[in-house]
Length: 167
Image (tube, rainbow, N blue to C red; front, side, top):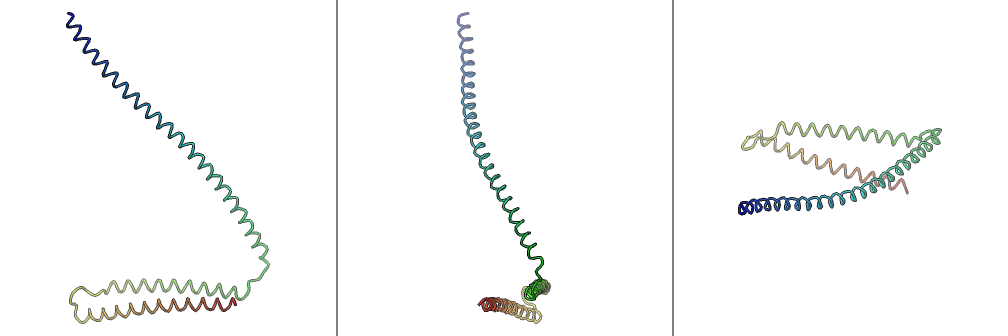
C-alpha cells in the first residue's frame, strides 16, 4: 500500500508540476499583454494629443478661410460699380476662344488616332495598300511634330508679347 501511495503521490506531483508550469506560462503571457496594453494606452494618449493639435490647426485654417472669403466678398462688392474695360473683355473672349480651340483640337486628335487605328497597316506584306498607309502614317506623324513645334512657337510669341506689353 505504501508503494501504491508513493506512485499516486508521484502522479499527483507531476500533475501539479504541469499545472504550475501552465500557470507560470500564463503569468508570463499576462505580464507581456499588460506591458503591451500599457504601451498602447500611452500611444493612444500621444495620438489623441496629435489629433487635438490637428483639430486646432484645422479650426484655425477654417477661420482664416472664412476671413479670406469675407475679404474677397468685400473686395468684389467694392468693385461692383466698376465697368469691365475693353481689354478685360477681349482677354475673356480670347481665353474662351483658346479653350474652344483646345477642345476642338483634342476631338480632332482623337478622331485621327481612331482613324489611324482602324486603318493600321497589316503586319507582313500588304502590298501597295500597306505602303500607302505607311507613307500616310509617316506624313501624319510629321504633321503632328510640326503642330507641336508651332504650338511651342506660339507660346514663345505670347510670352514675348506679354513681356513687351509690361515694359
